[in-house]
Length: 68
Image 1: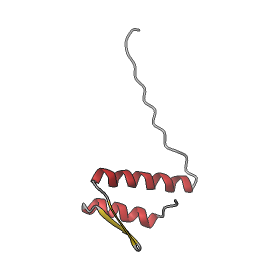
Image 2: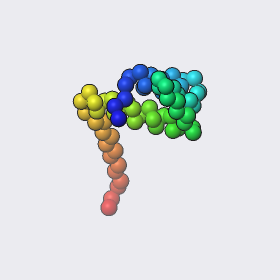
Image 3: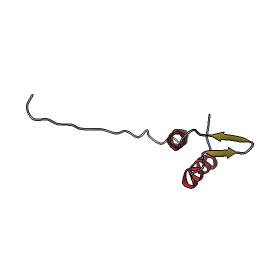
């Protein structure tokens, strides 16, 4: 599914106001928690980035220890 920036704005607005219900035109979605809403925002942001050809974000963690 392709997402729009309007949908992303609606999700962010809902998060900022503490709402868990988001309306997209004639559809309404109610999220169970704020964490679920934040996960939806991350998913939509990633999908929009992929659709415009932005490279995927990577995270590299380096850990060290003394000895073997």
